[in-house]
Length: 125
Image (cartoon, rainbow, N blue to C red; front, side, top):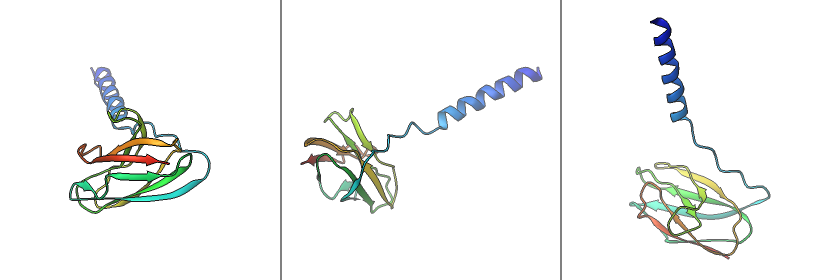
């Protein structure tokens, strides 16, 4: 009986460990990184619905969350928000930086994954 309880305990511990592990991190872009824009989140909206980034360069984008509500900056390659490009950390009342890997010129999309109505366009040129 003791062996069965020990086995069940180990299985439960393993399941909890896997469930609480962070997902695989996005690969760190290689090459130089240029400084990019600051995106402000306040009153459950972004201050701007357009972000401009330079083409073919890794760019540090700064998220300035000016409220206690949790937000992140998630950049996607499609308007259906399924092609992940750069998913930032979810933070409250904090500033965070994220490196967006180099993208070709074109239109991309961003949103707060916590509040999907907070969204806009990323223009890369």
